[in-house]
View 1 (cartoon, one colour):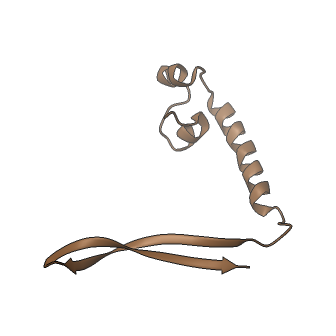
View 2: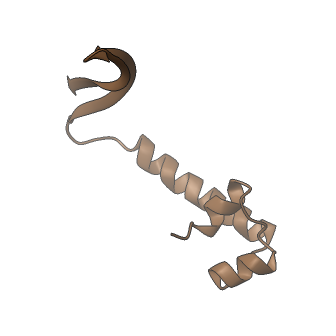
View 3: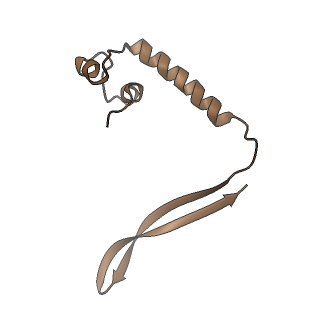
Length: 88
């Protein structure tokens, strides 16, 4: 799986002007072009996150935590599922 060049550069995983980056993505990126792309992406994501919703939505949050459990004389670590439902 190949990551997105902007995310990889932003995370410090690749140098935008490195030859390996050019080979991996088929294009070399300047630091200023990565910055401009990221700024546009940030603006788009902020607009999506702050948009008004036309209706309410129910949602479900699932998580798990691991607890030590004694089973058949052996202590093991098992997941305890946690589910929260919210209907706004």
